[in-house]
Amino acid sequence: MTAPHGGPLAGIRIVEFDAIGPVPLAGMILSDLGAEIIRIGRPGSAARVNSSGNAILMRGRKTTELDLKDKAQRDQAMELIAGADAMLEGQRPGVMERLGLGPEDCLAHNPKLVYGRMTGWGQDGPLSQTAGHDIDYIAITGALGSMGRKDAPPPPPLNLVGDYGGGTMFLIMGVLAAILSAKQTGKGQVVDAAMTDGASILMSMFYAFHGIGMWQAEREANLLDGGTPFYRCYETSDGLYMAVGCLEPQFFAAFLDKLDLDPEEFPQQDRGIWPKMVETFETKFASRTRDEWAAHFDGSDACVAPVLSIAEAPEHPHNAARQTFGEHGGVTHPMPAPRFSETPSAIGEDSGAIGIDDAIARWSP
Image 1 (cartoon, rainbow, N blue to C red):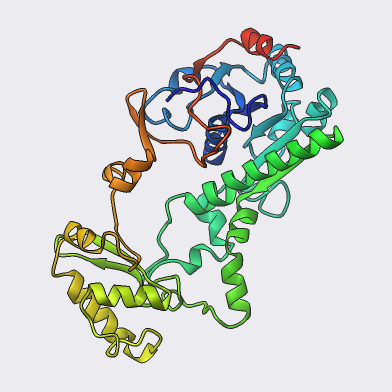
Image 2 (tube, rainbow, N blue to C red; image 1 turned 90 degrees about the vertical axis):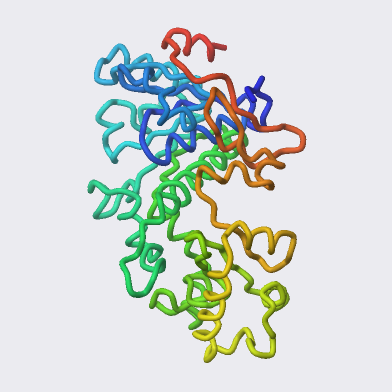
C-alpha cells in the first residue's frame, strides 16, 4: 500500500531531525497523513533506516545525512528548513541552539515555521537538563503509580503512556495546531511538547475522580485499575488470558448470562461480595482455553476479548477485516490511522537515502 500521496496533509513539508522515541513515530504518522517529510540524520544513519528495527517507524520519508557540526552542512540544513512548514526535533534543551539551529535562528530564516520540540521534562524546569526515559517521566505524573497490582511494583506500561501517548500525540497535535495558526496569521511559533505535560493531561479523568473522592491513591482499589471483578483479566486453562470490561449494568448482565451465573447471586455494585465474584470468575475462566472462551463470547455485548500477543493480533478476524495490519516491504505494519473518507491516508514512498542537494531542490519554489 504505497501512496501516490493525497492524504489530508498533502502539500505540508516537514523537516524531521533524527531522534529516538516519540519523534520517529510522529514523523511516521504525519507522513501517513500525506505530509512530505525529509529526515536529517547523522552520517551513516541512512543505512539503518530500512533495518528490521526501523522499517516501520521510518517508513514513508527520505533521509539525508548531514554533519551538523560542519558549518557548510549546517547551512544546508537551514536551507531545507527555510522551505518547510514545520520541523521536529527531540534533543536535550539547548543542543539545537548550540548548533545554530535553535528557534531564533530558524524563525529568522522562515518566519512561518512551526518549530516542534519534543522532550521528556520540557524546555525548562529543574529537571530539564536531566537524562530520563518514559518510565521516569510518567513516574512524576501520577500515571505510573496508579497502575498495577497493589502488592507488587508498578509495571512499565511499555512506552505507550509517556513516549507515545504523552509525547508523540501531543507533539503532532501541537504542530498541526500551530501550522493552522501560521496559515492564518503568517507567523510561526515554537511548540514545547513535554511527556510530563502530556501524560498529566492523559490522567485528567483520574485527577477529576480523585478530586471528588471517587479514586483512591491505593492501586488495584478503583474502577479501572483492576480493583473491580468486572474490569480485569482472568487466566484460562491454557495459561492465557481473557480481558473483561463489563462496567455498565447491561453489559455485566450479558457477562453473567454467558457464564451461566444467577444475577441475583452477583449484584454488581455490592463490594462485599466482590471477593466471591473474583473467585467465581477465576474458576469459570480456568475451565476452558482462551480461544474456547473467545468463541463463546464472540458477538455478545459482555465486553470480553481474548488477550492476544503481537504475533497473534494481525490475524484476529476483526483486525483482518479492517486491514488494521498489512504487509509492506515484507514486514507486517500497523496500517495508517485514523481513516478519512475524502483524503485517504497511506504509507508513502519507500524510505531511503536522499542527497541534500536533491532534498533542497524538491522544495525549491
